Length: 118
Image (cartoon, rainbow, N blue to C red; front, side):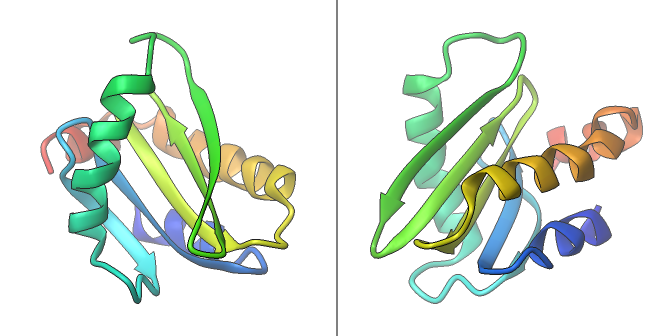
């Protein structure tokens, strides 16, 4: 799982990212979160996810801006991915890279179980 996150992080301009379950527990992370820890961010993001994620089926992308950075959230029924990038980054490229990289997680029940149990 760490290698998958490192592959996403290799996209130009991404400062850091983490994957967490819908309890807010971080399963893996990579990069620089200079303003907070991934665990603290996951707790805060979880509150946001719980109020905005409408469907327990399917996926949802959310994008917003925080502290001169772009935040992308990829939410699925079992987990979410938090991506912090430079404001000028190409969000479409990040989404595409993330979708491709996460396809191996979606198809691997053991990895999903590790995320859920984190």
